[in-house]
Length: 78
Image 1 (cartoon, helix red, strand yellow):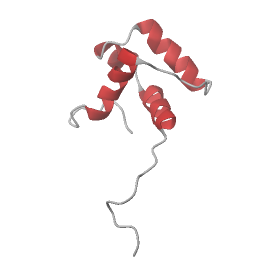
Image 2 (cartoon, rainbow, N blue to C red):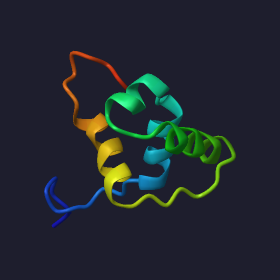
Image 3 (cartoon, rainbow, N blue to C red):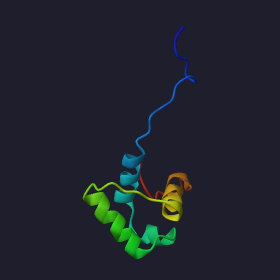
């Protein structure tokens, strides 16, 4: 008896994935999804300095949109 394909959980490094999204984000895309210019530069600064990024609510939801956008337009490579 072993572990079948559906009987396990996969670990996802959410902080790492978030850093990757932010590092690939451009100002144009950020403004298009509703992230303020100041917030964009704050996020970029934290991502570059490897500070822990603790997002809540609206900004996090907006960044998550990038993962689920239409694959025709490549906004962010994950």
